[in-house]
Figure 1 (spheres, one colour):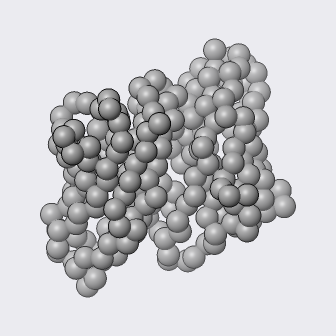
Figure 2 (cartoon, rainbow over the protein chains, first blue to last red):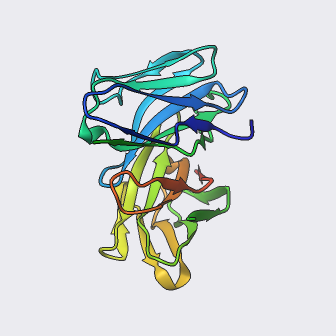
Length: 117
Length: 115
């Protein structure tokens, strides 16, 4: 594909329900990032994958949040028992490689807008 | 739709020199504007943001940005560069003002600091 894709683009759910957000990175990109953006707080890093492993989960806000990546490609971010404060735009980004000491250019997806009622 | 243009994919300055990273946005209504920084091997972090209060916004690590409506610009500056400023910088604009408004990122500018 031409870029990072995310689905759904919009998701409205009721408090307490589980949601799954999907990210399809650019083919061949080994690094994948999830971010959460809410206007009052700016962009918040959630989790980073290198291949299928997640060396940095430091940003996950609670144990209701989890993410996995299979086949070094598609990633799913799952939020269990959603709360209203989970409402935000969830961004996924991928980059071509992990360069120790270097700066990787991240290519961002369009985001999933999550609204928890 | 909102868009952001960052002029220069790579900027190199000497340590102690002025840093100027350019950002222009397209909007008929003053948006919320952000600068993010990505240090090596780390995720993005917010550097500063403009939310229609003061036009000169001060951020972390000595950076500041000035919102100029007449020029639709939000350039990032720092009077004296430090080696630790080497990173990639992203300008971003919000599509709206609600808590779930999407932000649009620029393509990024890689800042290198020469000793």
